[in-house]
Length: 433
Ligand code: HEM
Image (tube, rainbow, N blue to C red; front, side):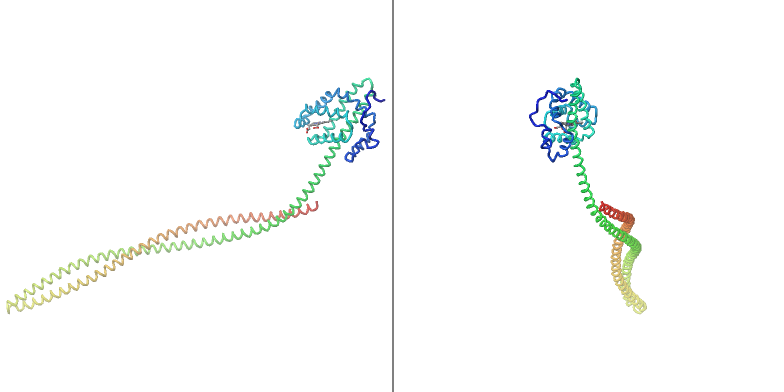
């Protein structure tokens, strides 16, 4: 039985258009959807019924929308989505308009476009499909209750009206499903493209990695050789420092020996110096005595001369005495000559002694100077000795550290070989992807 009392619509209905252009939305883009609608078979009567239902739906729109959001508010997950992107009050208004439009406008391209856009908005806010579909069921349930109340006296009318509502809700659901399906398809394509891109990139990088791994491996080999050479140098350095330390010890002993000799020369020269000074003093005394001697000889000579004069005055009696006096005079003269000779000799000796004294002093200074230099040299040699000791210790720690580094580098070498073979394996696996 038909529903009575609504005016004939001015625009052609989806049903009317279906005879020539597949319900008026027979576009390629919506081909699947239009054939689906075709499959659902909308009759002209049903389309009219939808228009006729508008005032009833409008009358109860607040109730419908409130019931809808009451359910949503019960689910924290849905509530969170609403609060993140909008608010219940704002959405109530949009839903009101949306539902009323359903019973008012044509099912044409614009209608489909708009619903598809709304469905995409829900995809965008990550509303899961099952909640979306479940919500349609809530709308259907509210609408069916209202229709039962409105047509309580005519079960057939209620049934007709419910059939139309059910169909309209199905259209919405189909659109939503289509949008989700398109999105899934798009995501799958993106994911496949991304996957291929990743495979290409991984292949590209793995290629590079194999090359890099091989280069790295040969660099590690060079490193091992370098470290080995450092270790050898360190070893040579150690032997050289040991040898140098030995030489420094010998040199130091040698120098100490020389220092001792210099000290003994100094001691000897001091004693020579003292002896020369004593000699000088003795010579002074001898000169003094020779002076006395010479004086005594002169006086003796005078006395002998006087005695000889007195003896000649005594005549014959003084003859013998005169001979003695003459002898005494001769002796005195000889004594004076001797004294002069002694003085000369002493003077000569004095000159020689002065020369010796000067030479000894010079030698002493020179030896002292050398001894100073020697002790400075000994200090230097001691410092060299200690420096060599430190250099030896450093050489030893270099040697130990190089050994450790060598072990590490060798381990790196082994690891990098493993990496290269893993990379080669990876590269082969990737090429088979
Ligand atoms: C029968 C199911 C539903 C219908 C008919 C529907 C309808 C609508 C409409 C008409 C809009 C306005 C779109 C625009 O901006 O033009 C909208 C937006 C929105 N809906 Fe729904 N909705 C449904 C289910 C849900 C559910 C279950 C949630 C739960 C979270 C939800 C949350 C939202 C939110 C957050 C927006 C705002 C989106 C934005 O502005 O980015 N909707 N909805």
